[in-house]
Image (tube, rainbow, N blue to C red; front, side, top):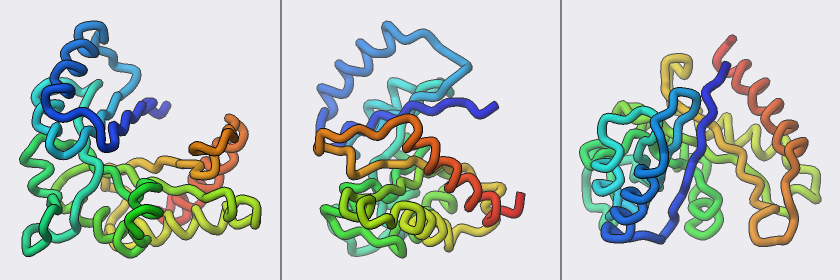
Length: 201
């Protein structure tokens, strides 16, 4: 049975002071569990705070919202996978809809980030999902399949890599529309089938 994962992406909220206050309150009331994993993705400046608060735990862990695919270099404002690991991240969020649609992140760039994360011994969570226009055009299945295949295209030996997939129905964000359990389940079935073919299991 798969262990459920609950992911909390703080986006551009909660600096170090607010992050510490939140983690103190949250962990005070959250008993250690073995039946699920909570991943908290704070802004990069708050990553060390969240990582310190969750140190030694396997049920609540820290992630990073974004990385650059290069290990180092002249990339002002960017954070590499080794830097993220050194700061306490255990998971990298890749391909979030805001990265794709606000910052123009491509599937090819996502592929390089997945590879960088795996090389740094970090797990990664690859996000896939369609906009309302793509959904209405009947492109959902082909789109998420492409995002999956291209996103993982550079990462070798997938069966031994620690990664997760997250279906993010962009069409249901801020539109008043709601993705039902059936909507999500249908996409999960597509993704599992495609991934099985890719891995060969």
